Image (cartoon, rainbow, N blue to C red):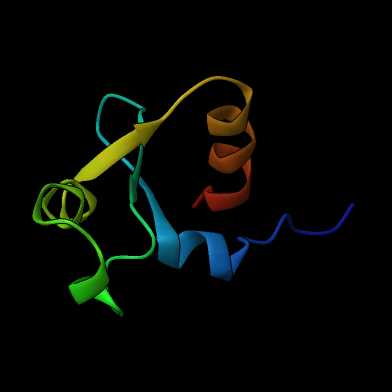
Length: 64
């Protein structure tokens, strides 16, 4: 059986914290920010965590 490779596109977008949570940054916060409200742009700047089955799948893709 061959090596299990890291999915590089996912590894650049997501990271796994020391506690095993999957951390992500919001999309749509780089361009056209003048069209978004200040509250929306401010919330998009912060990071958040992925939950559920999606997080489990991402951990398998990002593994090191």
